[in-house]
Image (cartoon, rainbow, N blue to C red; front, side):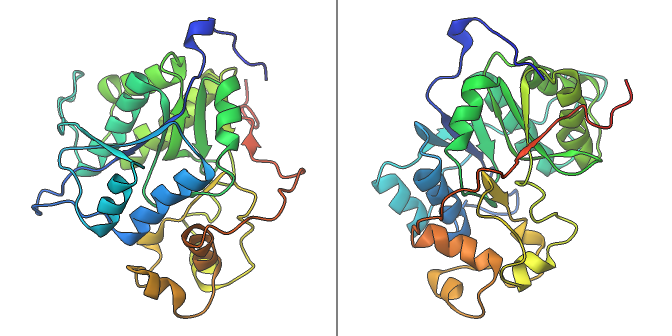
Amino acid sequence: MTKIKLEEDTAFAGLLLHYVRFKPEDEDSVTLRFLDYLSILSAVQRLKPHQILLHGDLQPTGKYWDDLVTNNLIKFVYRARNSTLSGRIKELAHMFHHADKTKIDILVEYGGLTIDFDVYFVRGERIKDILREYPAVTCYGDELGYNLGLAGGWKSSRLLRAWRRSFHVIYSADWNFNCGDMPKYLSEIFSDEVYVLDQVCNNPHSGDLRPFFDEHGTIHWKDSVAIHTYHRHSLIPQIESPEDLMSGNLTDYKELLLMIYENRTLPEADPKFIDRINPLDGIDL
């Protein structure tokens, strides 16, 4: 695959990291939880972006949010919830799609990287090198589709602009279509400008979470750029505090979080570790 050559003024500059969270309609506030806090800390430690922005319709509260703001580690950016579409379908069908569409809107407006709160950076600084060369980053899920747990790119990326357009012209009420099927399809079309990350949104795979949450030494996570944990779907009690993290048996999941909480040093990276998928592999052209 060759890398697309764009004009110098569109090249990737200082990295912005974006989170998105809207207030649940049945609640009066947005609280930043301990696990959310660790995600942001992982970015501070292991991505080192120029700035971290949280976009939403209500500024979060709580001791973890206050700690981040006090230390100038994050900035809140107000953004109204917008469910309007301009195609044949006039409105987003699900509340989840508000955040998903907003992520792509933000990438086209700002550039940078967007992640979910259940994503934790490990070898995150590699992202900077990738985005200096490639106008778009998508995240491999499996042979059926990709995952919006992590995505990024330049404001000028053709892939990101086409992805944003897809919500208006071929939006589907199926949660996976615009957020999983569409980035896979567009990565095939714009294969010259995209880096498809592997071992992030499928390590563990969302369909087989048990080893990551129940065992230790099973999942090889220490060479990945980041890990999408899917902890809300893990069927284990959520970790709400440092005390929860320290208690019980050590698992791969807990070791990942402890690495962040205690800011542990990782072993040397494996130079043979491969974290890129060729989006054209297996495609009958």
